[in-house]
Amino acid sequence: MPPALPLVLDAAVLPLGELRAACLDGDLRMLGGFAFCSIDVPESPMARAEALAAAIPAGHVVERMSAAWVHGAHPAFPRPVQLCIRSTHRVRIRPSAAREVRQVVMADHELKRLGSLQVTGWFRTAVDIVRSEEQFPRSVADCVSTLLLAAGATPRDCAREFDRVPHLPHKRRAQQRLATLRGFGAVSRP
Image 1 (cartoon, helix red, strand yellow):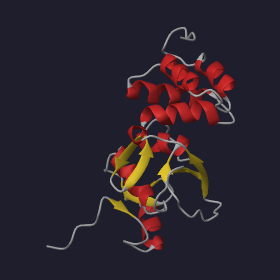
Image 2 (cartoon, rainbow, N blue to C red):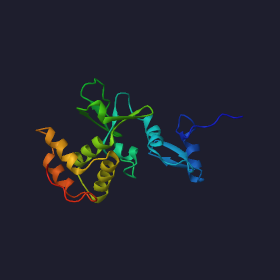
Image 3 (tube, one colour):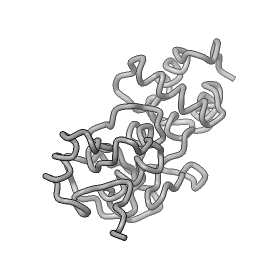
């Protein structure tokens, strides 16, 4: 019996030309800009994490819109990939146009491991997006709502998180954005 191919394929498994040709033939589809999978493989957080893992340097955590894509809360793969490094870790950052990296304070409970990839959890991802995204169109607001629902949280929980840290950048803007989220009713400060 011939060896089976993995569910997520990249240039380490087959030449890129072969992978792209299989896409054109309708046998494979692109998964996150870095990998491919069969058209009959359902997308899942684990498959998206596996597709992204080879492109993420050790010690880096996938965050914000990139984490939202991994969790399945946002349909489009964001460019550049948004990563962070925990403030307690010393990791060398190599500049790259394909990655946006920042250093953050983060507790262990705010992380989720999917295979070999570390990703911010649903709630932390929602908090970071509502606070840090330059633009907040309806698609991003819906993404934040999806993440909060997955975390079993509400915009009020986000507001409490913002109040917990006294000098948080973009706090006021984030609180205004929380009031625009659909599906939660009126949001008031606790």
